[in-house]
Image (tube, rainbow, N blue to C red):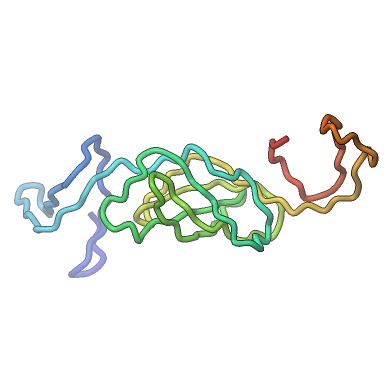
Length: 172
């Protein structure tokens, strides 16, 4: 426990496999423990398994929704503290407010200045993040050309699209 002032201390919670109500006690001499009559709730944090869609345009002109799916998506109390974090390769972060819809978290994905893939994480308290490395890719397509120009109405022609800012979306 680190003393900040006469009335403030900072400590880190120990790891635990227990979930549920937890009693808090403090001690400065490792003998005389004092129950402080404030309880915390330990819960299994969220785990992001996928996002839908997996990519979107950089400007997001239609304010499109990103659906985040995963495990342990249950609010441990107040559901007004759900955050979705987008982190780029340099560690820069953008936070946006999320909300529960059924067992999923929904948010409007934020605008981003250039095509790039970002990690998407969830927090239900603004402090503990999922850190699961699930990606959302931004695209900003500028098409230079499409070949062939004459195609069959049967829908079997493979197109070769040439351009910039399309990103690696892995969608056919």
